[in-house]
Image (cartoon, rainbow, N blue to C red; front, side, top):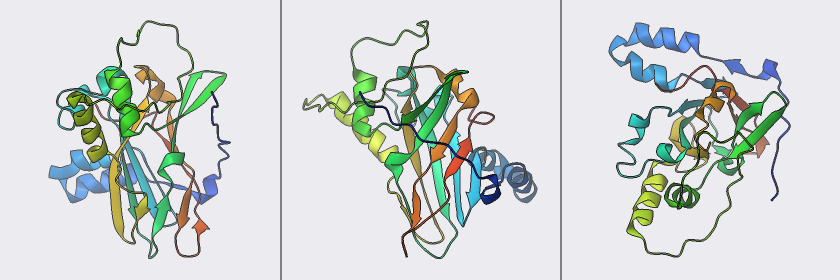
Length: 225
């Protein structure tokens, strides 16, 4: 099975971190809404007119509204609420399929996980058996899309819920925001988030097809509680 890895070359001069300033401004401007604002800016990076924020859902209660019957979190799948804000005058296209969750299995082993489609999420949540949380840590599997032609109503409902909650499009119009969930199979190894990054490598201005600098958002310190 082929695994895909990216070379995470960083250029700090081209990226602006905006965390503490955003939080302080939120509390000063609107104390009543400060908690929600804090979640939206917990893990955030901004440059070239684009701002991407990421909020890992590490509290099982956060899944209940979107997934009232079958929780992806209970099956070891992490949902990350991602927001793409475009403050430029041009539309930006984000290649959602290229986004990776970078995790460190140990000091010498880094892996990049692709996001799950709604169909892949259903297969992981509803497949027979379960993952052993006490098992020795090993590389996380790259998801394989296996067609499911069954008519199971639970699978149909869960896939609909996952699709409705997911990021709806990779095209972000000028001065607008697109947001939704991305799903990653951590096999219940949620402690990997302590050193995790959300890597967004492929963004282009649609006028002129000009690429933007990648985003590499540190999720290690922040996240929903």
